[in-house]
Image (cartoon, rainbow, N blue to C red; front, side, top):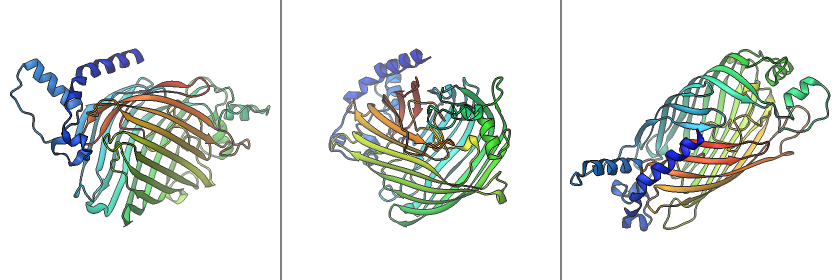
Length: 428
C-alpha cells in the first residue's frame, strides 16, 4: 500500500509541476496570499486539474474565474500505522466572519470514513471567530466505532517486579494488544476576547464509551488490570464534565501558519454529578510558535509545538489516559502509533522546519523531530524517561484560499516503530 501511495504522489507531481513557472510579482514582493486578488502566483491542485482539462480540450481561450472557494470537497484518504489505510468523504472549509484585517479565519471540517483496521469514524468540528474576534466558539461531535492499538502504560521501562499484573500493565516487552469500543462524544467551548489575541472561556464535554473489549484470548490485559486497580468498569463508562479555558492566539492561519503564536490552557473536570464514572481533574496545555524565516518566501518557517496533559486530582479511565496522538486532532507523536506511550500525565514537544521547494508553493517540504515522556504506576515520574522520533515529509498545496496542504510524512521512533503518515493540513 505504501508503494501505491508513493507512486500516486510522484504522478501528481509530474502532472502539476508545470505550474511552478506561474509566479507573479505579487508573490515576489511578499504580500500575504490572502491580500492578493485571486491569490496570484500561488498554484494548488485545483489549478492543476483546470490546466489538465484545458490540455485535454486543447482550448486555451476559456478564462477561469478569479473567485476561489474556501471549501474543499475531497476523498478522505489517509494512512498511518495506527489506523491503517483510510477511505471516505471529507469537507473542509474556511471563511471570514469579519474583515480579514482584524478577524481570524473560521474553519470547519466534517467527514465519514472507514479504515482497514475496522474503524468507522464520523465527526463534525468547528473553530469559529466572530467579527473582530470578539467571540470564539470551538468544538465538535464524534460518533465512531474504534479499534485502538495498545502497548500498556508508561514508557516501556524494564521492570524487576514479578507481579504478573504489573508486568502486563507496564508492558516492557511492548506486546501489542488491540482494544475495540464505540464512542459518542460532544464538546463545546465558548471564549470571550479580553485583550487583542487573548480569550477566556468555559465549556462542556460528554464522552460515552461502550462495548469495550480487547481482541484475542488474553487472561489479563492492560485494560483489565488498570480498570481493576482504579475501580472503572472495563466494558463501559461515561466521562462527562466541565472545562475552563484560557487562550492566546496571534497566528495568521490555523491550517498552515507562517508566523505568530497559539496557546491554549484547559482545566478539564470530570464530574460524577454529570454522570461521569468518577471525578478527575486534568490540566491540558497546547503551545505553538511560528517563526517566518524569509522575507520573500512566506512558507519558509520554523515551528515549535508543545502539548501536555497533567493529572491534578482523581483518576482517568484507561482509554482516556493522555499519551501519543491523544491531542485534539491525533497528530502528535509521528513515528509511533497512537497511544504507544501513555500515563496519568504526559508531556510532548516537537520542532519542525518547513521549506519551499517550488516558488509557487505547490510543493514544499518539512523535517521534524519530537520527544515525549509519561509517568506510570510503578514510580516512574514525568520527565524521568524520554523517547524521541524524527522524520521528513512533503507538502502539496491543496487549496490556496485556506492554505490547506496534503501532507505526506515518514517518521521513525524507537522499539521498531516507524511508518508513513498521510493527512490533510499541517500536524500543528
